Image 1 (spheres, rainbow, N blue to C red):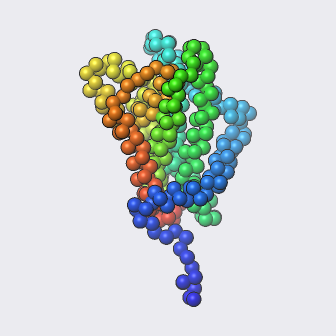
Image 2 (cartoon, rainbow, N blue to C red):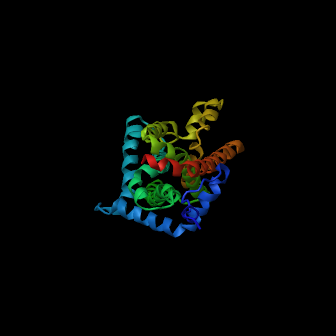
Image 3 (cartoon, one colour):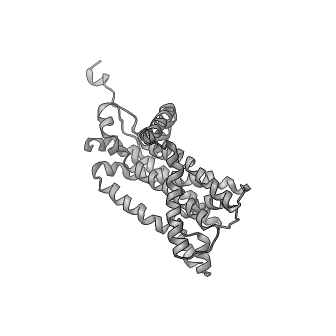
Length: 283
């Protein structure tokens, strides 16, 4: 047997349509490594902080307090639940934006590791999103004192809370996977998306709610335009899961958001699996 026949390519080309299956299969086979790396990321995130994991509670709480002062006290908003709505919006949008930017930079951030040893890069791409999901879950503890102060008890609508976070995570990871290979070639991509996430903060229902849009525009034209943002429904779902207020959304909006999440994840995994081995030379 010749030397060429004995050598096996570590990154054989994968057909585009088969990319999601290969990607998810690798994540499943290496699930123990994924779990350990997530634990490592969580420990490293707060190991030099005196308050440690307490920052997962304090950060959204302090940000929401600032926004509450600006938009409620100064702007004169009278809705009693507005501080809670802002707190939820900050947590969910923060989870999405950090997941997106973390996934986009997964290759450039781990360039040294990739050059030293062979690690399935699919694993490195999902670690930011899964780590952020753990952090955001801990951040939800900031809602407890706000709910107690406002006299809100958990309701049967809580099923929407995990679903909203799952959809936000899928969209964030999916979009991040699409652009991670391109960011390995030019880091202008990550800078662009940092601007997009900052702009998206105001274009998404973080400081406002879908009900406010309906109230200001009874015709529903602006509401239909707003719903084109796939993050509107996940944030609104988590918000109503906590405050327990029923809300009605047309079936097509549910299908649109779910289709966005699934399509972005499938396309993202296909793109990442197709190009990640070819762009590592730029790291």
